[in-house]
Amino acid sequence: MPLVSLLTDFGSLDPFVGEMKAVILSICPETRIIDLTHQVQKFNVRSGSFLLAAAAAYFPPGTIHVGVVDPDVGSSRRAIVVQSRRAIYVGPDNGLLIPAAQRESILRVYELTNHSFMRDEISPTFHGRDVFAPAAAHLACGKMPRECGPEISDYMGPSYSQTTFDGKTIACEVFHIDSFGNIVTNLSNDIRRLGLEFGDKVSLTFKKKRIPARFVRTYSDLKRKEFGILFGSHGFVEIACREASAADRVRVRIGSVVHVGGV
Image 1: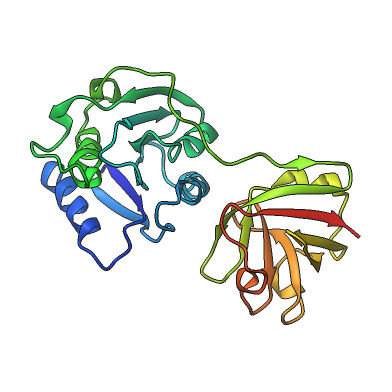
Image 2: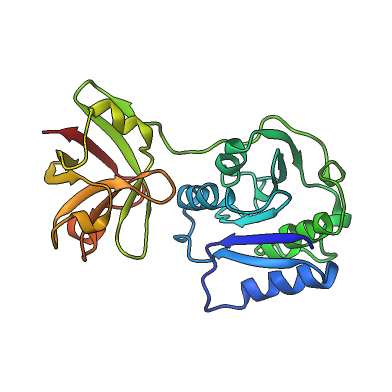
C-alpha cells in the first residue's frame, strides 16, 4: 500500500489538511496517510526542513513526503518533485525538501509542470490542495517522477548556516524549539571538537547573555531548572532546562545564534 506523509504549517483549526487528504484519497483511495506534523512555525521554512529531515529516515523506502511551508505560494516560485534513493518529496522549491532528500542522496529533481498531476482548478493561495496533494496521489498510484515535468538542477538549497569553530567555542543556529521548550540546534558531532565528557561544564552564550550548563546524556542527569546540552533523539545537540522551557528562559527564536564553549 502506498504511503504519503504530510508536513505543513497549517495547524489544526482550519480544514486545509483535511482537504489535502480528501484530494489524495479521491485520486488514490488505497493510500495510507501519516501526519508528520502540521504545527511547523508559520512561514518558517528552516524549521520545517529540519523536522522533515529529522523524521524522514524512520519511514519505509518508497514513501512520498509532501511538505508545505510556502510563504511564496502563488508567486513565480516553482513546484518540484525530488527523487532520492529512498523516497520522493513533493512541495515548493524553497529549500524545504532538500535537507531530507540530501541525507538520502538526491537522484533527480523535476519541476512539477504537468497539469495532469494537478486539480483542474488551482487556487493561487492553496497549492497544497491543488498541486502538491494531487501530484503525490498520482505518484502513489504508480506514476513516475519523470512524468511530472522537466529535470532541473538549479533548485534552492537549505537557507540555514553551518556551524563554525574558532578554537574555543562553536557557533551554531537554533533549528527548532519543541513543545517542551527544548532548543534544537544544527550542531551534531561537531560538538566533539570541544573534547567534552558527560558531566563537563559548558558555557552557552545567547547574544550577550551567558548561561552555565553541563554536557549530559539525558534530561534526568540534570537537576531541576538546571541547563544542559545533550544529543537529542535525532542526533542534534539540544539545549534543555530540566522541567522548564529553556527557550522561554533565554528568550531565543528559531534562527538565533548560540555559542557553545567549554569551561
